Amino acid sequence: MAQVDVTSDINIDRPRAEVAAFAVDPDHATTWYRNIKAVTWETPRPLAVGSRLAFEAEFLGRRLAYTYEVREHDPGRRFVMSTAEGPFPMETTYTWDDAGPGATRMTLRNRGAPSGFAKVGAPLMAAAMGRANRKDLAELKRVLEGTP
Image (cartoon, rainbow, N blue to C red; front, top):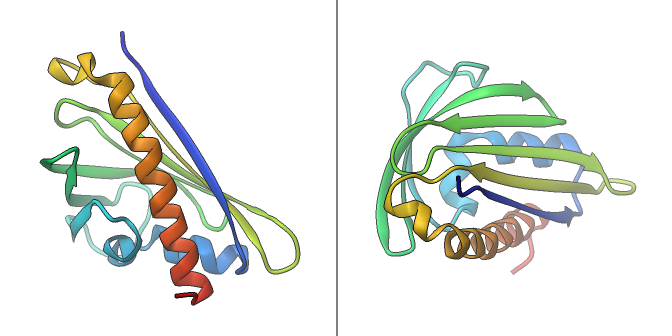
């Protein structure tokens, strides 16, 4: 079975609690995720284990719609959400660690097992996902650090 497992990280010159709170807020997803076009809450706020969020995205020239469910939420430390929908069931994990005074190392991991036609393109998908994740983390850093 083809597996995709992509991990990217970045240091952000902002406190861990601030980076984590911004990154997990679904209402900010379109601000720093280039491929995410819209997020709709399917369950009431606030964000908690069991929350369901409908995402609309574009990836590799295709429009995707899927619903993530929050599996773990340890504020400021770890956040995990997953989807079993579509040709690419996936789990997304964020972790945050202190990276010096007032700085945070954020790690973004996406892993899953593509099925059907998506399975054939798993290596290309993993490479594209890695590029996209690095760009997204760089955008998150830019937004949170207030740099142009």
